[in-house]
Image (tube, rainbow, N blue to C red; front, side):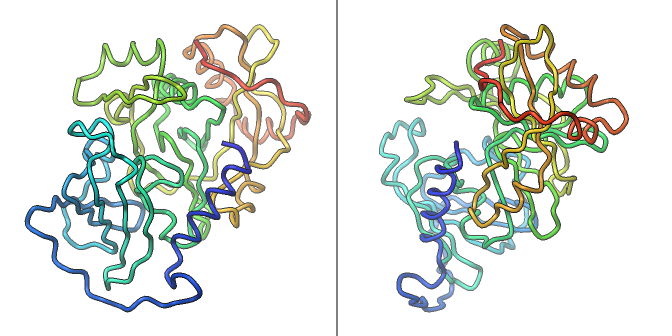
Length: 334
């Protein structure tokens, strides 16, 4: 997703999430009504917030947000999911009729928007559009080891996920499978444990070696079948309340070298949502990861691990010769 897409998504979500409604109208404060007995109810914990999610036909929140399930009944927000089931859930295909509403504990409405997917951008859960300007997000797969946090970015989320899993086999831990989340107040990277998205040979290998309850298959009109994999089933994950250093962004691209290598410093800032979070993108250090074609994910991960294990490796990379002309963006690694 490029900068224009992120900015347009941000304007739409921000306009929908205004707590004062159109033309500055302030909604009446009402107490949240008790949920009907038929409603399903789950509580999720994201960062410092708790959300009670209610609805007649809830998605499989245990699969999509397993590490974030909470036992407490106290919640800062209530998220209401209304309408028929999402595609693939109980046979329904009427996704566009679903809607998500977010209310504060005192009943004030914070957000109302269509629900196409749990992982649309910005996502419905956590409902970043209802949480003000505290968080900055962008698509990425994030891993951590020792003092180093990496945000893997590229045009193919499956490639980033495949490389992250290979790094986890070398002792790295998953921080976030689909989104880089930064707390703008404290400038720290936060954990968000949602399923990894894999395609092709990597998906087949994981499906064959992972318990059935840890994988699901979804269909995309653009990319075809995609395997969703619970992160805690395939690698070590960081604790929910981890507050990690700002990441080194690693932009995956194709190179002419015989071996994969981290190259130079990328000067082009990253685009974050909301658009007002542009200063976060400027604050990150960015390098290119050149991958020869073809290259196995394990081979690429081993070379990355070797380079980043050197003392002050990230700082040295960012002071290398600047890479002003990016190599072509990568497709699938293997």
